[in-house]
Length: 312
Figure: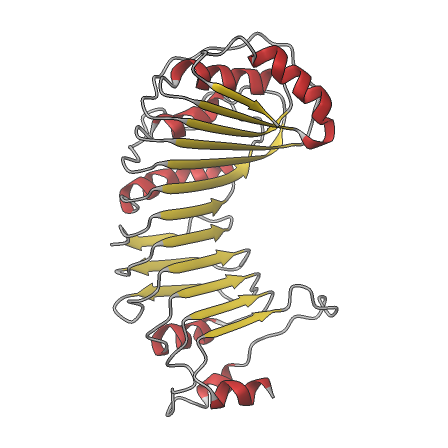
C-alpha cells in the first residue's frame, strides 16, 4: 500500500526509519528494482525534497538514483546503512541540496562533494574519506570522528568550509595532551560558534584542545561537553597558558566535575577571554552536588567581576 501511495502521489518527504523495529537483528535492504521500474516516469519523485533512511541498507545505485532524478531534493539523510560504500554528490544535478547527513555508515569508503550549495553537513564516521571542492557555502558542520581523523581534517575544514559559522566536533579524549593539535592551525575566520564534545574523559589537562579555540579569532560562543570514563580527581597544579580571545562572550561548560581538567580549562578561558560576559557551568550529572561545591570553590570570587557565573 505504501508503494502505491508513492507511485500515485508526488511526495515531498520520504522517510524510512527502522531503528525501532522489533526485527532489528534482520537488516532490510531498500529494493532498487522498485525505483528503477519508474525510470520512464519520474513523476512520483520529481517533487521530492527530503529523503531519509535510518537503519536501512541502501546500495550506491539507489542513492545515486535519487540524487540524479530528484532536482528539488533539499535534504539527504542516511544513518546506519551497511551497504553504502561510495557516494558522489556533484553539481549541477544537486543544485538544491542544502542539508546532508551521513552517520554510522561503516563501509562508506569514499565521499565526493563538488560544486553544490550545501549549507549544513553532519558526518559520523571513522575515516578521512572526504574529497571536497567548491563547497564554501557550508555554514554549519557537525562531525564525530576519532581524534586522529579530526587532526587530519581540521586543515580540510579551514580550506574548503571558508564561510563556516558553526562547528561541532566530537571525539574521544584518549589521554589527550598539549600536543593534540598543531599549534599553527589555519584560521576559521568566520566561525562564531564552536561545540567540542569529548568522550572517554580522564582528569588530565585539556589544553590540547585550545588550538581549535585559538584558530577561531572571531569566536563568540563556546560549548564544552565532557563525558567521563574515569572520575578520579587529580590534584595536580593548574597549568596556565596565555592567548587572548577578543570576541568570546559566552562559554557553556557541560559535564563539569571540578578536577584538574576542569580547573585548567576554565582558568584558561576566564583569564584569556577579555570580552567574556557569561560562564554557565552544568555539573557532571552523576555527582552533581559535589561538582557544584567544587565549581563554587574554584570559580566564585576568582573570575573577573564582569563575568556572570551561572552554576546549574
